[in-house]
Amino acid sequence: MATHPAQPQTPAPGDSYVQSFARGLQVIRSFSANAPHQTLSEVAAGSGLTRAGARRILLTLQTLGYVVTDGKLFTLTPRILDLGFAYLSSMPIWNRAEPVMEALVQQVQESCSAAVLDATDIVYVLRVPTKKIMHINLGVGSRLPAYCTSLGRLLLADLDDDEVRARLEASNIEALTKHTLTDIDALMAKVAQARKQQWCLVNQELEEGLISVAAPVVDRQGRMVAALNISGQANRTSAKAMQETMLPALREAADRVSRML
Image (cartoon, rainbow, N blue to C red; front, side):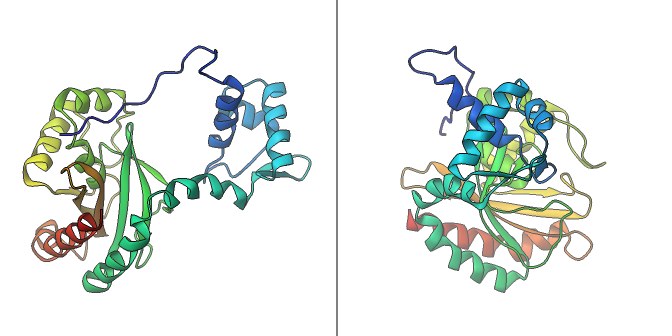
């Protein structure tokens, strides 16, 4: 099993830590789908900075073309996508994986996504949707908690038990639906099950009516580097049907992507 670094601790300012750069990233991360347009005060509160500090960073980002303002509200510009594209372009595998995922979507008539693990979250690196099945708007770069998603539990399964428990304990675990598991020991058991069977199905734990199943993408050393999933609506696809009719096609697609690595 691979060992991936957990969320890093914030070091003290020094030769190896540029605090102003870190603060700039905090300002960028304060923007989200729920807060796409913010006042200076909102940015300062969201990034944990003073108004003066947030203002200097916002004006720097504006000069560089990453932020625009109407004099009151600040908004990120499309140029911010360059930062994420640098990561995606360094992994050309996803350009080659997209046709495989598109073929899978055509076969099963459900959405397919690819994600990687980042601390306690999953981050989407590719999505091929069919129709909107979630209230959450997801795209490349979107984050969801690992503990209640099929992609997340499967990616956690590539870690050793101590690391899995540490990440679960660091997660903001809450009951998102009446089906959501919140007990850490129960979640550990689900991760262990995913590790043993090399796939994971989650039924309506992230959102009512949403069901998904995930399969691993592994490199030549057998290390899980990502996972693919199929998501559907529970009222038209039962857990049994998803496992029996869609999981084999998903695993085949994940194996094809793995062979590209």
